[in-house]
Length: 192
Image 1 (cartoon, rainbow, N blue to C red):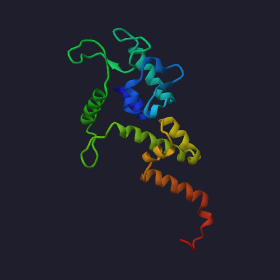
Image 2 (tube, rainbow, N blue to C red):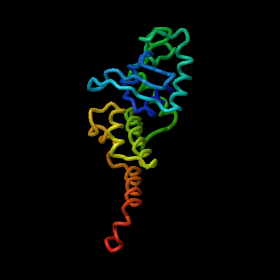
Image 3 (cartoon, rainbow, N blue to C red):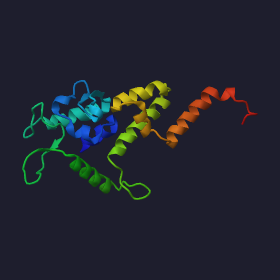
Image 4 (cartoon, rainbow, N blue to C red):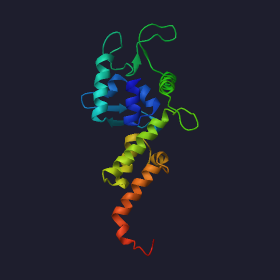
């Protein structure tokens, strides 16, 4: 579950992309995932952060031991517990990932103001928002960053990416601060 959390949150993967990863799709040396034929039949390469790479290597040290299937075509995420009466390792399903997250959220008491647990897809949303905020904080060009973010997340266009970036107070505040720094001198006090 730890590896699932790391990849969903730090790489913005979809749940289906995560559970379809095979060992052959993971380049731990270079910290790159190959996402095959995802939504809209798009494939892409997803580079990971240094921290996510460390987690990946740590996970693989255990994952590449017996009794787990070590063939390149074996599922990347699996566990060693029994499943449906079978003993030994098994690949995670989307339902199993969600159940694991529900258990973690419940144990940690993570709920929103209305008492709802986060959805798995909220991790992808958080990734997109944090990527945009990081761009603002680092002084990057947001307009050139958005198409890159769309490509990274496997979207067909930036319109799909914009869905994740609707009005969010933190993003609005960062954009407002940037605007103020760059253009407040053009607006005289008489306009305000």
